Image 1 (cartoon, rainbow, N blue to C red):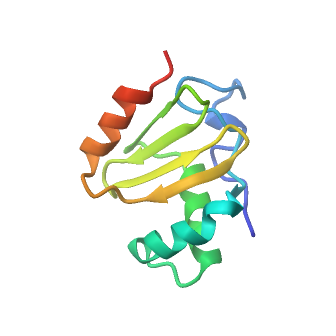
Image 2 (tube, rainbow, N blue to C red):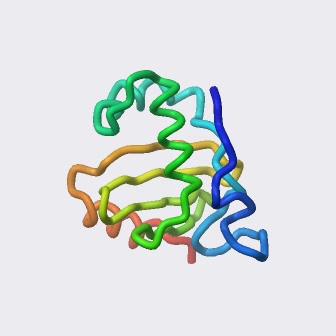
Image 3 (cartoon, one colour):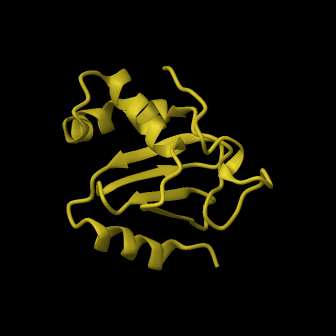
Amino acid sequence: MTGTKGPSNLYGNKNQKPTEHISYPYANSFNNSTLYDHFSRHGKEFGANSITDYENKAIYFANKISTVADSFVDGNNSTYKYNYVTNTLAIINSKGKIISYFKPKSGKSYYEKQKEMKVRK
């Protein structure tokens, strides 16, 4: 699949190291073992016309720096990134593979609950 480096390249910070908010240098692709399933369940939420379109939208979201998004790193070193305005959530592992990309049905409360339960201590 195709992927491009976005603005969060090099962890989205000038120190170019993981932080409590991001664990990957840049997102480069969707996890191949779950891509089809996620596209089937969530592709319409994003107006994706194809599996490649869905993956590219996920990569763009994961790499875009936004003032209306929040993120945290869980105990498995995966980054949860949530946009409060678009109700979009992506989970990205520390190697830049997107694990999940969707719009939670319960929105902000879903993200906040995940953050409360999984934030790295």
